[in-house]
Each structure stands twice: as structure tokens, then as C-alpha cells.
View 1 (cartoon, helix red, strand yellow):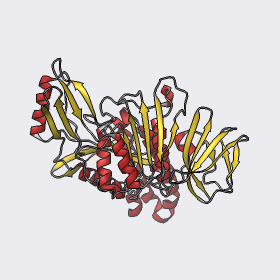
View 2 (spheres, helix red, strand yellow):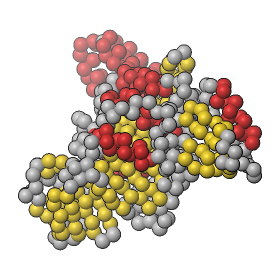
View 3 (cartoon, helix red, strand yellow):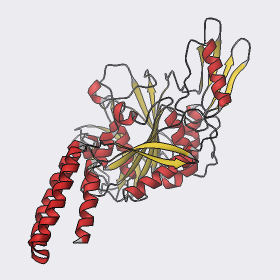
View 4 (cartoon, helix red, strand yellow):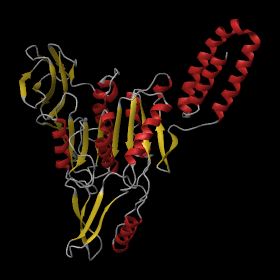
Length: 463
């Protein structure tokens, strides 16, 4: 009876952490278990014991019905004498089976840990892949000298530089006046804050709190969160299954670039980004009298070059993305640097602003949520998720893995298959929606399928 009561209390505690919708689902499931337990309890423990148990259930039912605790829930942890906060979002599937992993979501400069549910809404990725979202909050700038320098720039500038939410990620801001050559700012933001340690302890706490496996851990960051994503990968990448950076880069003072950590990389960046420039620096008018050169990051070409060399990838395979009809004038070039495990994928975007987030329902040529999901899914271990299920798109070829005959979602077109060095090993046309690959050796390949102006690229396994 004591064991059953303990299990009961544990279930009530879990139910109380979720939203009304999820709680209703969990409570309905729990009521079914109680109905089953009534039969099991009546014989060994008697009617009186059963009444007491049901009394406890009624009280707990009232508590969990009245008290509504949202999903996500806010948690705190002490790191280096500072109380740090973060959000934990639990997928609905985790109420009935153990979740498959964690997506750590890192917000941008001056932003909030709530962004990934309010602004970008990454929850569909978590739901489709049965993964927790863990979103930490950055601290304000802790160095008084940096704050003073920022206040000085604000006093002579038309733009306000806010430092209330800043990651310690090796991002050094260098501001130099064009005509005078005077350096106004050359400071690394939150250089004394160990956010790598914070994120690491937060991951450990989440794994422990929810009994999750220490695998399938991904880090996703936007803007300055992308800088933090790369910094964490360089320091703790051995525990990660992949990283995703959106409109972010690598800071001038980033640490750990020793080519020692191999990890799958997915990077989204617009060449017209007005906040985190693709080249790493840009000019900006501070006032009527002053124009400054501002350097924030390493050039994106240098970032991609670092990861492709580290991962020893093959030659790039390029496609122009047009997964959905779009008339917005925003183009996306998807560049895949192949590797059996640690591929590097770069989405080179044109005519999109810094904060632009692609959504198919908004008439974009691709969907950020789908592309993120498509990147994560092949790198999950111990799961059986289907690509069509997690992205909502019909696969452009199937089956995968393929034995001899490959089928295409289109009736006719051309395809080229590349090995992991990026060398073409097979190229031909098809006219009946399929092709014979029996001559291809077993292995992992990149397949590029073209029909008219539409081009699709993906990883293929040949048995």
C-alpha cells in the first residue's frame, strides 16, 4: 500500500507541473490507472483501505484541478554564487513515455528565455520529436567598465545599446570612428561570467529531474545565442549530438578553436543581416557627425571553414531551396558539406533581415521549424521517428535506407549521388518515378534530385 501511495504522489507531482491541456490528458490517463487499481486493491487490502486510498485521490484531484502551473515551468540553479533561471518545456508525449532528449535554446542579445515559445515557437519541434526544451536566461553585463563604455556610446549615438541580457560567449565588440580612427569600444561582453558552466549544470539538473538519458542533447541559439551555441560546442561538444545557429556567429574572443571537437552543425545566416553581419563587421552612423566601423564576429566564411575542416567533410553540395511557392524575393541556398555523421549544413540566405523566421504558412520558400527538425531527426539515437511525421512533408525519395530500387515523389527528373567526399558517383535521369541503384556500393551518400527549377538534397543510405 505504501509503494502504491508513493507512486500515486509521484504521478500527482508530475501532473501538477503541466498546463491545463496536458494536465487533463494526464489526469484522464491517471483515472484509468486508478480504476484498474481499485480492482487490485480491493482483494488484498479490504474495503476500508480502499476508501482511504480513494479519499487521498479525491484530495489530490481537487489540488491538481484548482492549481494550474504552466508549461513551461521556471526553475533556478545556483552557479558561482548567482541564482540563475531557466525554463523547462515538457512535450505532451513525455506524460506517457520517456522523452528522447533535450533541445537547449539560447536567446539573443537583450532578449528573453521565453522567446522560443513566444517569438519563434520551437515547441512543434519538441512535440514531434518528443524532446524537452530547456531555455536559460542570460545575465546583464557584470563588468562596470563595459557598462560605462556603453553609456558613453549611448550619449553620442542615436542608437541605444542595452546590456541587460548578455551571454559570456567570447563576443567582443570593437567600435572605431571612421575619420578619427579612435576606438570607442573594444570590450568582451560578460567575459567573467561562466555561461558554459551554467548551461552544463542546467543540462545535468534537467537530466536528473526528469530521468532523461544523457544522449540526444542539441543546442540551438539565435543571434547572440548562436555565438553562445558555438562557444558551448567548443568547450562541451563531446556531450552534444548537434548544434543549430540562427543569425549568429563566432566571437572574436571565442575559446577552444583547436579542431578537437567534431559535431554536426546546422547554420542559418542571411548575407543581408543588418545586426550580425555575414562578414563580421559593418559601418553604422552613430550621429550626424560620427560614423563608426563595428566589428562583432568572425566572418561567416571563416566559421564554416573551421567546422568543415574540423569535421573533415567532403566537397559541398548546393541546392536552391524552393520547398514552398514564394513571391517574397527571399532566396535560400542550402550548402551541405557531407560526412557520415558530422555533416555541416549552411543555409545562405539573401534579402532577409536579422530576425526573420521562415514560416511556410507566411508564404516562405522553406520553414525554419521543419528544417531544424529535419536536421535533428537523423542524429537521434534510440528513436524511430519518420521524416514525414516530424516535418509534415512527403519525402522526395523513399525508402531510406534503399536496397536496389529507389522511388521518387515526382514522376520524372534527374538525380546525382555523391559520396562523403563530395564526388559524384552516379548521375542519371528517370521518367517513371524510380531508378535502379543495384550497382551502387553499400554506404552513406548525398542524393540531389532535380525536376525543373526544384532541387532537393538529402542523405541516403544504400544497403
